[in-house]
Length: 413
Length: 225
Image 1 (cartoon, rainbow over the protein chains, first blue to last red):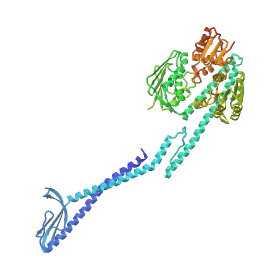
Image 2 (image 1 turned 30 degrees about the vertical axis):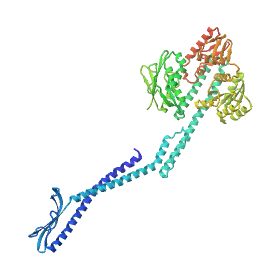
Image 3 (image 1 turned 120 degrees about the vertical axis):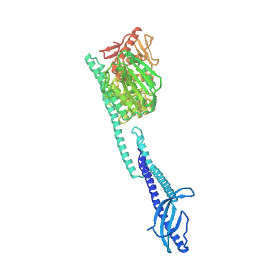
Image 4 (image 1 turned 60 degrees about the vertical axis):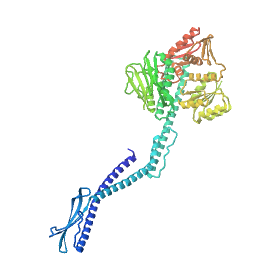
């Protein structure tokens, strides 16, 4: 959940609750207030009616609002308010009235006074007022909600921007991390921490990178010296034993050098030092690789079937694409038998390379791990490199074994 | 033929120059950027071997200076880094070739000869060994004056042998020359036998001699006897 949603949601929920509660409470308070007012106005009317009777001696009657009758004796002890239903002649229906009844002795005569006031009018008024209250509150809350939202947005905009900046930051790119300064202390503190961390990481990253490159240089140079000297020794007249020993030393030192280079390449891929700068057609690379390996296929009498109906295009580093396909192809040759075959098929977003081979030459579980070898004399880095290259280019690689050994590379969508 | 070798590792420098002197080249040595820069400004060379990882300066800068002063000099970059960017950068700046350490002397020799041929320092495009001659421009092989059809790999292999005549070449060195490091070499030796047999057969069919000798099943030597 986004931060703003997290803040806005409870805000909205409490506002709505308050809105309804206040409106309902308002309704009841108004009801009480208006009832009181009605009672007061009835009492006031009574005062004027008594005064009128005292002066003229004649009671007024305006049913059903005012009913004054002369009676023989007083039977009611105290005045009372009651609610009654009276037939409304205008609309011909029962209407609720508030009735005030009292019995009084005025100038030796006893009177019964009944004053009534229709309460439906006040009910309507209460409803109207409550509704008005609701609408006003709703508008006020709504406006304040949108204003807060707007303010939050502008305050968090810089944070959002910085977050995006951090997300897109990469050590391999040349750009420095550019964070926007805000006038909010907490955000600035966060920026300072992030900046310090990235600078520290960047120097570590650069020194690691330099170390790998320097290590490569430092290792390759002594290897070169050994190799050149051994090669010169080989030119002398040698016994078979000496000759064999020198050749095997040359091969061992070459393996060491290749191993070193493969490991450096793995590290460089892990450090994302290869830029995926070009859109490549896998079809073309496979085609040129097949051509390049032609005599290798011939030497093992391997038949190659290449089916490409669709074009597999991908943004990738050229050198890595070359290594990936080269390694898969030489793998398909190395683990093949004489007279076997290789099937390559390309579809949109999929490359499949299958080869014949011995049933158990691979262990499916750890096939992509480093230094896991089949029965070939390789280092077991070829497929680890392929896997790493796939991982860094959003490609999925899968090994399937049925009659054939198949490697399937698919572009994740 | 005058060659300047720029390499900061003294032992490597000496090993390379000893090898080239045996090949009748005149060698001058420079073990630093400063020394190399000085030599470039004074003398003219047919070829410069340039290690771009010098301690006191970037070899690519040196390459710019070389190309400014001596346009016709061939340059082969030697680098410890197998980096495509460096390679492309170097070739863009006018280098003729790029060799990654560690390399074998036979491979270096083959590259040097190729550059010299391309820059016409050898004076001719034809490489001769008794009855066998190779025209490197038309990429054809003729034996006793008759053109023989060679596949590209067979041609490459024969040229490699002839350039490195009288030298012992291991199977690995040959495979690497043909494949240029691109391949896991573990199982790729069979094809050398196949190609060598084809070459021998074709030369024999044209009444040529078999100059390719097998040494203990581990190496080959192209020589008179």
